[in-house]
Amino acid sequence: MPIFDIIAFDADDTLWHSERLYVEAQTQFTQLLTHYHDPDWINDRLYQTEMQNIQQFGYGVKAFTLSMIETAIELTEGRITGADIRTIMNLGKKMLSAEVELLDSVRDSLAKLATHYPLMVITKGDLLDQERKMARSGLEEYFRHVEIVSQKSPERYARLLRQHSIEPVRFLMVGNSLKSDILPVLTVGGSAAHIPYEITWLHEVAEPPADGQTGYYPLESMGQLPDLLAKLERGA
Amino acid sequence: MPIFDIIAFDADDTLWHSERLYVEAQTQFTQLLTHYHDPDWINDRLYQTEMQNIQQFGYGVKAFTLSMIETAIELTEGRITGADIRTIMNLGKKMLSAEVELLDSVRDSLAKLATHYPLMVITKGDLLDQERKMARSGLEEYFRHVEIVSQKSPERYARLLRQHSIEPVRFLMVGNSLKSDILPVLTVGGSAAHIPYEITWLHEVAEPPADGQTGYYPLESMGQLPDLLAKLERGA
Image (cartoon, rainbow over all chains, first blue to last red; front, side, top):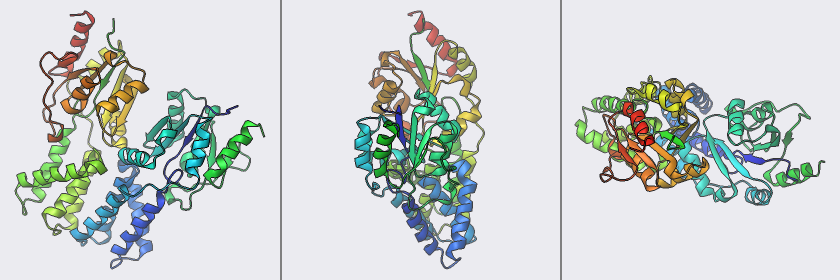
Protein backbone atom coordinates (compact mmCIF):
# COMPACT_ATOMS: atom_id res chain seq x y z
CA MET A 1 0.00 0.00 0.00
CA PRO A 2 1.42 3.39 -0.94
CA ILE A 3 1.80 5.38 2.23
CA PHE A 4 2.28 8.72 0.49
CA ASP A 5 0.10 10.45 -2.11
CA ILE A 6 3.14 12.04 -3.69
CA ILE A 7 6.92 11.99 -3.34
CA ALA A 8 8.68 15.28 -4.08
CA PHE A 9 12.36 15.73 -4.88
CA ASP A 10 14.66 18.69 -4.66
CA ALA A 11 16.70 18.98 -7.89
CA ASP A 12 20.16 20.61 -7.42
CA ASP A 13 22.49 18.24 -5.53
CA THR A 14 19.64 15.78 -5.03
CA LEU A 15 18.98 14.65 -8.62
CA TRP A 16 22.05 16.15 -10.27
CA HIS A 17 25.36 17.78 -9.35
CA SER A 18 25.15 21.55 -8.89
CA GLU A 19 27.12 22.91 -5.94
CA ARG A 20 30.43 21.76 -7.41
CA LEU A 21 29.80 24.04 -10.40
CA TYR A 22 29.58 26.95 -7.97
CA VAL A 23 32.73 25.81 -6.17
CA GLU A 24 34.66 25.48 -9.46
CA ALA A 25 33.54 28.91 -10.63
CA GLN A 26 34.39 30.42 -7.27
CA THR A 27 37.88 28.88 -7.34
CA GLN A 28 38.52 30.49 -10.71
CA PHE A 29 37.08 33.73 -9.38
CA THR A 30 39.47 33.81 -6.42
CA GLN A 31 42.40 32.99 -8.74
CA LEU A 32 41.47 35.94 -10.91
CA LEU A 33 41.65 38.25 -7.88
CA THR A 34 44.72 36.65 -6.37
CA HIS A 35 46.87 39.77 -7.00
CA TYR A 36 44.55 41.73 -4.75
CA HIS A 37 43.58 39.48 -1.82
CA ASP A 38 43.93 36.00 -0.41
CA PRO A 39 41.26 33.40 -1.29
CA ASP A 40 39.69 33.17 2.18
CA TRP A 41 39.08 36.88 2.32
CA ILE A 42 37.63 36.89 -1.22
CA ASN A 43 35.34 33.95 -0.44
CA ASP A 44 34.20 35.62 2.73
CA ARG A 45 33.40 38.90 0.98
CA LEU A 46 31.64 37.13 -1.89
CA TYR A 47 29.41 35.32 0.59
CA GLN A 48 28.59 38.60 2.34
CA THR A 49 27.70 40.18 -1.01
CA GLU A 50 25.49 37.20 -1.91
CA MET A 51 23.66 37.48 1.40
CA GLN A 52 23.17 41.23 0.95
CA ASN A 53 21.74 40.66 -2.53
CA ILE A 54 19.61 37.59 -1.85
CA GLN A 55 16.43 39.52 -1.06
CA GLN A 56 16.62 41.25 -4.43
CA PHE A 57 18.41 38.70 -6.60
CA GLY A 58 17.19 35.40 -5.15
CA TYR A 59 18.99 32.12 -5.86
CA GLY A 60 20.68 30.84 -8.98
CA VAL A 61 23.49 31.44 -11.41
CA LYS A 62 22.52 34.93 -12.59
CA ALA A 63 22.38 36.14 -8.97
CA PHE A 64 25.73 34.46 -8.27
CA THR A 65 27.33 36.04 -11.35
CA LEU A 66 26.11 39.52 -10.45
CA SER A 67 27.41 39.07 -6.89
CA MET A 68 30.82 37.93 -8.18
CA ILE A 69 31.04 41.03 -10.38
CA GLU A 70 30.03 43.29 -7.51
CA THR A 71 32.55 41.68 -5.15
CA ALA A 72 35.33 41.98 -7.72
CA ILE A 73 34.69 45.69 -8.13
CA GLU A 74 34.59 46.26 -4.36
CA LEU A 75 37.67 44.22 -3.55
CA THR A 76 39.74 45.94 -6.22
CA GLU A 77 38.33 49.36 -5.36
CA GLY A 78 37.17 49.65 -8.94
CA ARG A 79 40.57 48.76 -10.45
CA ILE A 80 39.37 45.48 -11.98
CA THR A 81 39.58 45.55 -15.79
CA GLY A 82 36.74 45.06 -18.23
CA ALA A 83 38.52 41.94 -19.51
CA ASP A 84 38.48 40.41 -16.03
CA ILE A 85 34.79 41.17 -15.62
CA ARG A 86 34.15 39.51 -18.96
CA THR A 87 35.98 36.45 -17.56
CA ILE A 88 33.65 36.45 -14.53
CA MET A 89 30.62 36.78 -16.80
CA ASN A 90 31.86 33.79 -18.77
CA LEU A 91 32.18 31.73 -15.57
CA GLY A 92 28.45 32.27 -15.12
CA LYS A 93 27.62 31.43 -18.72
CA LYS A 94 29.69 28.24 -18.48
CA MET A 95 27.66 27.19 -15.44
CA LEU A 96 24.40 27.82 -17.31
CA SER A 97 25.47 25.61 -20.20
CA ALA A 98 27.18 22.89 -18.12
CA GLU A 99 26.18 19.32 -18.79
CA VAL A 100 23.64 17.97 -16.31
CA GLU A 101 25.29 15.09 -14.45
CA LEU A 102 22.94 12.88 -12.48
CA LEU A 103 23.89 11.64 -9.04
CA ASP A 104 24.43 7.92 -8.46
CA SER A 105 21.40 5.65 -8.71
CA VAL A 106 19.00 8.57 -9.28
CA ARG A 107 17.57 7.27 -12.56
CA ASP A 108 17.12 3.70 -11.24
CA SER A 109 15.46 4.85 -8.04
CA LEU A 110 13.09 7.22 -9.84
CA ALA A 111 12.17 4.49 -12.34
CA LYS A 112 11.33 2.11 -9.47
CA LEU A 113 9.40 4.69 -7.43
CA ALA A 114 7.46 6.11 -10.39
CA THR A 115 5.64 2.79 -10.84
CA HIS A 116 4.08 3.15 -7.37
CA TYR A 117 3.97 6.88 -6.63
CA PRO A 118 3.30 10.15 -8.43
CA LEU A 119 6.57 12.05 -8.29
CA MET A 120 7.19 15.77 -8.39
CA VAL A 121 10.09 18.21 -8.23
CA ILE A 122 10.20 21.21 -5.90
CA THR A 123 13.27 23.30 -6.56
CA LYS A 124 14.39 26.86 -6.04
CA GLY A 125 16.55 28.97 -8.32
CA ASP A 126 16.29 30.62 -11.70
CA LEU A 127 13.08 29.62 -13.45
CA LEU A 128 14.61 29.23 -16.90
CA ASP A 129 17.85 27.58 -15.73
CA GLN A 130 15.97 24.98 -13.70
CA GLU A 131 13.59 24.23 -16.58
CA ARG A 132 16.49 23.83 -18.99
CA LYS A 133 18.36 21.51 -16.63
CA MET A 134 15.23 19.43 -16.14
CA ALA A 135 14.85 19.11 -19.92
CA ARG A 136 18.53 18.16 -20.36
CA SER A 137 18.47 15.70 -17.43
CA GLY A 138 16.28 13.22 -19.31
CA LEU A 139 14.29 12.76 -16.08
CA GLU A 140 11.18 14.73 -17.06
CA GLU A 141 9.17 11.60 -17.88
CA TYR A 142 9.21 10.52 -14.22
CA PHE A 143 7.62 13.67 -12.84
CA ARG A 144 3.98 14.63 -12.85
CA HIS A 145 4.68 18.17 -11.64
CA VAL A 146 7.70 20.47 -11.56
CA GLU A 147 7.40 23.39 -9.16
CA ILE A 148 10.08 26.08 -9.21
CA VAL A 149 9.81 28.36 -6.20
CA SER A 150 11.72 31.42 -5.04
CA GLN A 151 12.14 30.08 -1.50
CA LYS A 152 11.44 26.95 0.53
CA SER A 153 9.78 28.15 3.70
CA PRO A 154 7.17 26.20 5.70
CA GLU A 155 4.54 28.64 4.34
CA ARG A 156 5.58 27.93 0.76
CA TYR A 157 5.39 24.17 1.31
CA ALA A 158 2.00 24.52 2.98
CA ARG A 159 0.72 26.51 -0.01
CA LEU A 160 2.07 23.96 -2.50
CA LEU A 161 0.39 21.13 -0.60
CA ARG A 162 -2.93 23.01 -0.60
CA GLN A 163 -2.60 23.74 -4.34
CA HIS A 164 -2.05 20.04 -5.05
CA SER A 165 -4.66 18.90 -2.49
CA ILE A 166 -2.13 16.83 -0.56
CA GLU A 167 -2.43 16.14 3.17
CA PRO A 168 0.94 16.80 4.86
CA VAL A 169 0.95 13.32 6.43
CA ARG A 170 0.72 11.85 2.91
CA PHE A 171 3.69 13.89 1.62
CA LEU A 172 7.35 12.88 1.45
CA MET A 173 10.08 15.33 0.45
CA VAL A 174 13.53 14.08 -0.56
CA GLY A 175 16.50 16.43 -0.64
CA ASN A 176 20.05 17.29 0.35
CA SER A 177 19.41 20.50 2.27
CA LEU A 178 18.32 20.25 5.89
CA LYS A 179 17.40 23.92 5.81
CA SER A 180 15.35 23.90 2.59
CA ASP A 181 14.13 20.34 2.06
CA ILE A 182 13.85 18.75 5.50
CA LEU A 183 13.15 21.13 8.39
CA PRO A 184 10.35 23.19 6.74
CA VAL A 185 8.60 20.01 5.57
CA LEU A 186 8.71 18.49 9.06
CA THR A 187 7.39 21.81 10.39
CA VAL A 188 4.24 21.56 8.27
CA GLY A 189 3.69 17.93 9.28
CA GLY A 190 5.16 16.15 6.28
CA SER A 191 7.86 13.48 6.06
CA ALA A 192 11.37 14.13 4.76
CA ALA A 193 14.25 11.94 3.62
CA HIS A 194 17.64 13.63 3.87
CA ILE A 195 20.38 12.57 1.45
CA PRO A 196 23.44 14.75 2.08
CA TYR A 197 25.49 15.96 -0.86
CA GLU A 198 29.30 16.01 -0.78
CA ILE A 199 29.35 19.82 -0.36
CA THR A 200 26.90 22.09 1.46
CA TRP A 201 26.72 25.80 0.67
CA LEU A 202 27.22 27.76 3.90
CA HIS A 203 23.78 29.38 3.48
CA GLU A 204 22.10 25.94 3.56
CA VAL A 205 23.85 24.65 6.68
CA ALA A 206 21.46 23.77 9.53
CA GLU A 207 21.25 21.51 12.55
CA PRO A 208 19.65 18.12 11.82
CA PRO A 209 16.33 17.27 13.51
CA ALA A 210 16.47 15.50 16.88
CA ASP A 211 17.05 11.73 16.78
CA GLY A 212 13.82 9.82 16.36
CA GLN A 213 11.81 12.81 15.12
CA THR A 214 8.63 11.50 13.46
CA GLY A 215 8.79 11.49 9.68
CA TYR A 216 12.54 12.18 9.44
CA TYR A 217 14.57 9.64 7.46
CA PRO A 218 18.31 10.21 7.10
CA LEU A 219 19.73 8.24 4.15
CA GLU A 220 23.18 7.98 2.60
CA SER A 221 22.24 7.79 -1.06
CA MET A 222 19.29 7.85 -3.43
CA GLY A 223 19.77 4.10 -3.90
CA GLN A 224 18.43 3.56 -0.37
CA LEU A 225 15.14 5.34 -1.06
CA PRO A 226 13.19 2.46 -2.66
CA ASP A 227 14.13 0.23 0.31
CA LEU A 228 12.99 2.89 2.77
CA LEU A 229 9.64 3.10 1.00
CA ALA A 230 9.28 -0.71 0.95
CA LYS A 231 10.02 -0.81 4.68
CA LEU A 232 7.51 1.94 5.45
CA GLU A 233 4.86 0.22 3.32
CA ARG A 234 5.32 -2.97 5.34
CA GLY A 235 4.75 -0.88 8.45
CA ALA A 236 8.23 -1.68 9.75
CA MET B 1 -23.94 34.40 -17.27
CA PRO B 2 -20.14 34.24 -17.05
CA ILE B 3 -18.85 33.28 -20.46
CA PHE B 4 -15.33 32.44 -19.29
CA ASP B 5 -14.18 30.06 -16.54
CA ILE B 6 -11.20 32.24 -15.80
CA ILE B 7 -9.73 35.56 -16.88
CA ALA B 8 -5.94 35.75 -16.90
CA PHE B 9 -3.84 38.92 -16.92
CA ASP B 10 -0.31 39.61 -17.96
CA ALA B 11 1.45 41.69 -15.26
CA ASP B 12 4.24 43.96 -16.60
CA ASP B 13 2.75 46.85 -18.60
CA THR B 14 -0.72 45.36 -18.22
CA LEU B 15 -1.29 45.72 -14.45
CA TRP B 16 1.65 47.97 -13.63
CA HIS B 17 4.29 50.07 -15.39
CA SER B 18 7.45 48.15 -16.26
CA GLU B 19 8.89 48.94 -19.69
CA ARG B 20 9.53 52.54 -18.77
CA LEU B 21 11.90 51.35 -16.02
CA TYR B 22 13.91 49.56 -18.70
CA VAL B 23 13.84 52.65 -20.93
CA GLU B 24 15.00 54.90 -18.08
CA ALA B 25 17.83 52.54 -17.14
CA GLN B 26 18.85 52.21 -20.77
CA THR B 27 18.94 55.99 -21.19
CA GLN B 28 21.31 56.27 -18.24
CA PHE B 29 23.31 53.37 -19.64
CA THR B 30 23.80 55.10 -23.00
CA GLN B 31 24.75 58.35 -21.22
CA LEU B 32 27.42 56.48 -19.31
CA LEU B 33 28.94 55.25 -22.57
CA THR B 34 28.48 58.51 -24.44
CA HIS B 35 32.28 59.09 -24.67
CA TYR B 36 32.61 55.88 -26.65
CA HIS B 37 29.61 55.66 -29.00
CA ASP B 38 26.39 57.34 -30.02
CA PRO B 39 23.17 56.23 -28.30
CA ASP B 40 21.61 54.50 -31.33
CA TRP B 41 24.63 52.30 -31.81
CA ILE B 42 24.73 51.46 -28.09
CA ASN B 43 21.01 50.63 -28.02
CA ASP B 44 21.40 48.48 -31.09
CA ARG B 45 24.31 46.54 -29.65
CA LEU B 46 22.58 46.11 -26.30
CA TYR B 47 19.56 44.63 -28.05
CA GLN B 48 21.78 42.23 -29.98
CA THR B 49 23.48 41.14 -26.75
CA GLU B 50 20.11 40.62 -25.06
CA MET B 51 18.92 38.45 -27.95
CA GLN B 52 22.13 36.40 -27.89
CA ASN B 53 21.72 35.84 -24.14
CA ILE B 54 17.98 35.21 -24.01
CA GLN B 55 18.20 31.44 -24.38
CA GLN B 56 20.50 31.25 -21.35
CA PHE B 57 19.40 34.25 -19.28
CA GLY B 58 15.68 34.46 -20.04
CA TYR B 59 13.66 37.61 -19.32
CA GLY B 60 13.84 40.05 -16.45
CA VAL B 61 16.03 42.59 -14.71
CA LYS B 62 18.98 40.33 -13.82
CA ALA B 63 19.26 39.21 -17.45
CA PHE B 64 19.02 42.84 -18.60
CA THR B 65 21.71 43.95 -16.12
CA LEU B 66 24.12 41.21 -17.18
CA SER B 67 23.54 42.12 -20.83
CA MET B 68 24.19 45.81 -20.11
CA ILE B 69 27.49 44.92 -18.41
CA GLU B 70 28.51 42.64 -21.27
CA THR B 71 27.64 45.30 -23.86
CA ALA B 72 29.58 47.96 -21.96
CA ILE B 73 32.70 45.79 -21.89
CA GLU B 74 32.41 44.99 -25.60
CA LEU B 75 31.71 48.52 -26.74
CA THR B 76 34.63 49.94 -24.77
CA GLU B 77 36.92 47.05 -25.75
CA GLY B 78 37.39 46.35 -22.06
CA ARG B 79 38.30 49.94 -21.16
CA ILE B 80 35.21 50.52 -19.04
CA THR B 81 36.11 51.15 -15.38
CA GLY B 82 34.98 49.16 -12.39
CA ALA B 83 33.22 52.26 -11.11
CA ASP B 84 31.14 52.50 -14.30
CA ILE B 85 30.21 48.82 -14.06
CA ARG B 86 29.13 49.41 -10.50
CA THR B 87 26.91 52.21 -11.82
CA ILE B 88 25.34 49.77 -14.31
CA MET B 89 24.80 47.21 -11.54
CA ASN B 90 23.06 49.89 -9.50
CA LEU B 91 20.74 50.69 -12.42
CA GLY B 92 19.58 47.07 -12.19
CA LYS B 93 19.18 47.17 -8.41
CA LYS B 94 17.20 50.39 -8.67
CA MET B 95 14.82 48.68 -11.09
CA LEU B 96 14.37 45.74 -8.70
CA SER B 97 13.42 48.03 -5.85
CA ALA B 98 11.32 50.49 -7.85
CA GLU B 99 7.88 51.29 -6.57
CA VAL B 100 5.11 49.32 -8.31
CA GLU B 101 2.89 51.85 -10.09
CA LEU B 102 -0.45 50.51 -11.26
CA LEU B 103 -1.83 51.46 -14.64
CA ASP B 104 -5.02 53.53 -14.84
CA SER B 105 -8.26 51.87 -13.73
CA VAL B 106 -6.54 48.53 -13.05
CA ARG B 107 -7.65 48.25 -9.44
CA ASP B 108 -11.25 49.27 -10.17
CA SER B 109 -11.57 46.90 -13.10
CA LEU B 110 -10.11 43.96 -11.17
CA ALA B 111 -12.41 44.66 -8.23
CA LYS B 112 -15.45 44.61 -10.55
CA LEU B 113 -14.38 41.52 -12.47
CA ALA B 114 -13.35 39.54 -9.40
CA THR B 115 -16.94 39.46 -8.19
CA HIS B 116 -17.96 37.46 -11.31
CA TYR B 117 -14.86 35.63 -12.46
CA PRO B 118 -11.89 33.80 -10.98
CA LEU B 119 -8.85 35.85 -12.00
CA MET B 120 -5.28 34.75 -12.50
CA VAL B 121 -1.93 36.22 -13.52
CA ILE B 122 0.31 34.70 -16.18
CA THR B 123 3.60 36.56 -16.40
CA LYS B 124 7.11 35.91 -17.57
CA GLY B 125 10.34 37.17 -16.04
CA ASP B 126 12.36 36.62 -12.90
CA LEU B 127 10.48 34.43 -10.44
CA LEU B 128 11.46 36.40 -7.34
CA ASP B 129 11.11 39.86 -8.91
CA GLN B 130 7.62 39.08 -10.20
CA GLU B 131 6.55 37.67 -6.83
CA ARG B 132 7.88 40.71 -5.02
CA LYS B 133 6.14 43.10 -7.40
CA MET B 134 2.88 41.19 -7.00
CA ALA B 135 3.19 41.47 -3.21
CA ARG B 136 3.96 45.20 -3.39
CA SER B 137 1.17 45.89 -5.91
CA GLY B 138 -1.57 45.28 -3.35
CA LEU B 139 -3.45 43.33 -6.04
CA GLU B 140 -2.82 39.81 -4.70
CA GLU B 141 -6.26 39.53 -3.14
CA TYR B 142 -7.93 39.60 -6.56
CA PHE B 143 -6.06 36.61 -7.98
CA ARG B 144 -6.76 32.95 -7.38
CA HIS B 145 -3.55 31.85 -9.14
CA VAL B 146 -0.26 33.50 -10.10
CA GLU B 147 1.73 31.63 -12.74
CA ILE B 148 5.24 32.84 -13.55
CA VAL B 149 6.56 31.20 -16.71
CA SER B 150 9.84 31.38 -18.60
CA GLN B 151 8.13 31.91 -21.96
CA LYS B 152 4.65 32.44 -23.39
CA SER B 153 4.40 30.03 -26.30
CA PRO B 154 1.17 28.35 -27.49
CA GLU B 155 2.50 25.09 -25.93
CA ARG B 156 3.03 26.77 -22.58
CA TYR B 157 -0.50 28.22 -22.61
CA ALA B 158 -1.93 24.84 -23.61
CA ARG B 159 -0.12 23.19 -20.70
CA LEU B 160 -1.32 25.84 -18.22
CA LEU B 161 -4.91 25.39 -19.39
CA ARG B 162 -4.63 21.60 -18.96
CA GLN B 163 -3.10 22.03 -15.49
CA HIS B 164 -5.99 24.24 -14.44
CA SER B 165 -8.61 22.12 -16.28
CA ILE B 166 -9.77 25.06 -18.39
CA GLU B 167 -11.24 24.63 -21.88
CA PRO B 168 -9.58 27.11 -24.27
CA VAL B 169 -12.99 28.48 -25.36
CA ARG B 170 -13.68 29.36 -21.71
CA PHE B 171 -10.39 31.25 -21.30
CA LEU B 172 -9.72 34.97 -21.73
CA MET B 173 -6.21 36.42 -21.60
CA VAL B 174 -5.67 40.16 -21.15
CA GLY B 175 -2.33 41.75 -21.95
CA ASN B 176 -0.27 44.38 -23.71
CA SER B 177 1.92 42.16 -25.85
CA LEU B 178 0.51 40.87 -29.14
CA LYS B 179 3.40 38.42 -29.33
CA SER B 180 3.17 37.00 -25.80
CA ASP B 181 -0.38 37.58 -24.59
CA ILE B 182 -2.60 37.62 -27.67
CA LEU B 183 -1.35 35.56 -30.65
CA PRO B 184 -0.36 32.37 -28.75
CA VAL B 185 -3.68 32.38 -26.87
CA LEU B 186 -5.68 32.73 -30.10
CA THR B 187 -3.54 29.91 -31.54
CA VAL B 188 -4.67 27.50 -28.82
CA GLY B 189 -8.32 28.50 -29.25
CA GLY B 190 -8.68 30.98 -26.40
CA SER B 191 -9.88 34.58 -26.40
CA ALA B 192 -7.58 37.56 -25.91
CA ALA B 193 -8.11 41.23 -25.09
CA HIS B 194 -5.24 43.46 -26.20
CA ILE B 195 -4.55 46.64 -24.25
CA PRO B 196 -1.46 48.32 -25.75
CA TYR B 197 1.06 49.95 -23.44
CA GLU B 198 2.65 53.31 -24.28
CA ILE B 199 5.97 51.61 -25.17
CA THR B 200 6.60 48.21 -26.74
CA TRP B 201 9.97 46.48 -26.39
CA LEU B 202 11.29 45.65 -29.88
CA HIS B 203 11.36 41.93 -29.00
CA GLU B 204 7.61 41.97 -28.32
CA VAL B 205 6.57 43.72 -31.53
CA ALA B 206 4.23 41.63 -33.72
CA GLU B 207 1.52 42.09 -36.35
CA PRO B 208 -2.00 42.26 -34.90
CA PRO B 209 -4.47 39.49 -35.77
CA ALA B 210 -6.67 39.99 -38.85
CA ASP B 211 -9.76 42.17 -38.40
CA GLY B 212 -12.70 40.22 -37.11
CA GLN B 213 -10.62 37.25 -35.89
CA THR B 214 -12.79 35.24 -33.49
CA GLY B 215 -11.97 35.85 -29.83
CA TYR B 216 -9.75 38.90 -30.43
CA TYR B 217 -10.77 42.07 -28.60
CA PRO B 218 -8.63 45.19 -29.05
CA LEU B 219 -9.20 47.68 -26.22
CA GLU B 220 -7.69 51.03 -25.37
CA SER B 221 -7.51 50.75 -21.59
CA MET B 222 -8.23 48.38 -18.71
CA GLY B 223 -11.25 50.55 -17.87
CA GLN B 224 -13.00 49.17 -20.98
CA LEU B 225 -12.66 45.54 -19.88
CA PRO B 226 -15.71 45.30 -17.58
CA ASP B 227 -17.88 46.76 -20.38
CA LEU B 228 -16.50 44.26 -22.88
CA LEU B 229 -17.35 41.41 -20.53
CA ALA B 230 -20.84 42.80 -19.92
CA LYS B 231 -21.38 43.04 -23.67
CA LEU B 232 -20.13 39.48 -24.28
CA GLU B 233 -22.33 38.17 -21.47
CA ARG B 234 -25.38 39.74 -23.14
CA GLY B 235 -24.39 37.92 -26.31
CA ALA B 236 -23.95 41.20 -28.16
